[in-house]
Length: 157
Image (cartoon, rainbow, N blue to C red):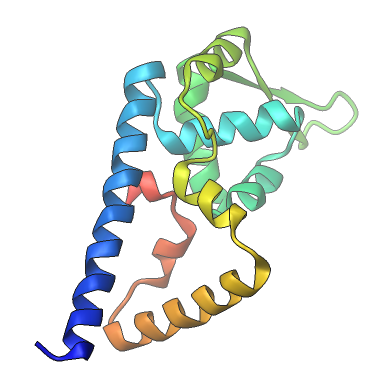
């Protein structure tokens, strides 16, 4: 086995460790509070900044606004968030956690943003820049990829 093959095999092994850890965290979140990891992250963002608009939440989660809206529909039906329209401008919808949403967050395993998002946030800027460059190169070598996947929560991939 060449050193290049060994290095590629090790990189693949590390991706498997990352994906496995992410999957385990999502499963722990669902078991603890009955909602997905992406839904908990959205709820945590609303706890941090009550009254966000859907577009602001989408930006905070780095997902498409329609994806955020679909995510919110599910947790609103579960009674974990509520939408309120502004009395002066009915087009403006603000998002808030309900008491049930607060309780669900208390049950959720940490970190509420998910372990990969949290770990990436711990890296120094220079390491993130290198990682982004290297991942872009890797994606380029993969050929056909769907860039729309970049705007979906990991739990939905």
